Image 1 (cartoon, rainbow, N blue to C red):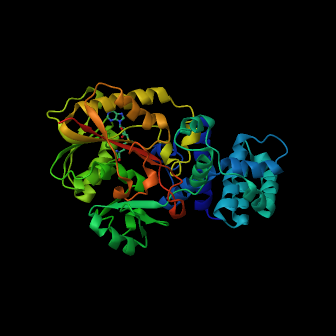
Image 2 (image 1 turned 120 degrees about the vertical axis):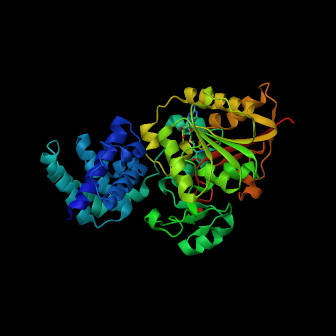
Image 3 (image 1 turned 135 degrees about the vertical axis):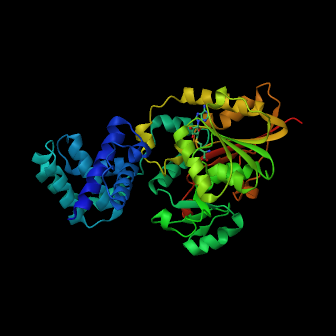
Length: 430
Ligand SMILES: C[S@@+](CC[C@H](N)C(=O)[O-])C[C@H]1O[C@@H](n2cnc3c(N)ncnc32)[C@H](O)[C@@H]1O
């Protein structure tokens, strides 16, 4: 057994512990200087991340199988080792002897679990021999009850079950081409699928930076659903456009690629550096402003504004399976207040006749439809503009009766789903 294999597995166990016990997000842990991945080779880092994500995506299902063979309450440190090994055997289909042997080695190497190495061996051999049948009977990982409560206005019970199933499948890699006319060609070169909205979808991407077109900045990674808000803004060539809450910059690049005069604003210096790096790689231009939007005043009004507001990010769970564990108890009221304040500011900064797109990658009605309802009740001179789903490469049922786009992870299920998003458009009186 290679050391790299053991290091990756140990790092996956540590990631799991940090998400479940310290309520930290994988995205923060991966880059943290004191994080579990810091000393690993790139391939071991990738393996540790993917193993932790797979385990979290299936946590209750793995526990249901392990519970069959564990008679006593198992110390958390051992349980996480067993979960990771069970994920390798039952989900990834790794040769069971490799998964079992490395779990036993991991147990031996820790003071808290060394005396339980025989238990680990016995339980995992059972999982390898009989676990697949038990695992097949389990239901997909359920969303936290608090999340489901917030989703009831956008999805039925059956649709929520379909969303949970979509989360279990993870996500393919979608890219957006700088020149949309090149998307068909890149789909062929990369062995991907051209999606109806113009994204190119890759089911197995490998090392992204090695793919043709990365070095030349011909495309960037962006979930198909995340490309819809900028498309919904329509033709903005030559216009003064504000990308409000811009980092890491997927929508900034879409807007800049159409020939708009883009100002990208975000509160986070660190995240804005990623916007700047993305612009540099793709050879696109935008002015960058790092500030709290709530305390900012533009020199002049904008012809168009895209507000992709900070939100619960519950639409991205298929790509971030740690979110329901790390952020189950976040302060929704605080986020709603921030979103509303940002929306009011965006309306104020629109020039007469200017258009605004508001979006959130959330599955909660309060972070989407609720804000459109709120705006309609304010004395703000903007009116809703109905969006045409087929014009955006979407199916008609992806727009609601009010002409707002409501995307869910169970859409395009056969092709690998999409992130959950809410997108609505408004126009200021002339
Ligand atoms: C959903 S992300 C934006 C994603 C981005 N539009 C994209 O497509 O890559 C929300 C962003 O809002 C920023 N943000 C949060 N509060 C803000 C504030 N008060 N003023 C400006 N930006 C803020 C966060 O730093 C975060 O980058």
